[in-house]
Image (cartoon, rainbow, N blue to C red; front, top):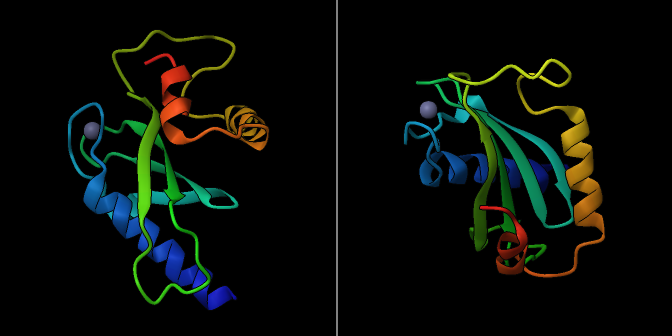
Length: 127
Ligand SMILES: [Zn+2]
């Protein structure tokens, strides 16, 4: 139901604000600077822009024990997938700047076929 989704969205934004720091300057994100951009089953993707340094981050929040009841706060796992400091940074003429729709689409595609858990996901990742 919409109300539950709204509540969950609010919860996820709050969770990010309280638990995730800018990878560039370690500041916390303000809830106003966090946008939920995509949801795939139990994985939510948010874009957050640091108030202090302007770094844009793509954050994934996974509900560990999905339930239809959101009276209690669900268990979640949250990871910064990548971040994009505004400078200093080399300009790439073809795809400059912040997270692109294409990158989000590629991530979506990847996750659509991905069946491992988050630990494996990040073991495979290049950081
Ligand atoms: Zn920052």
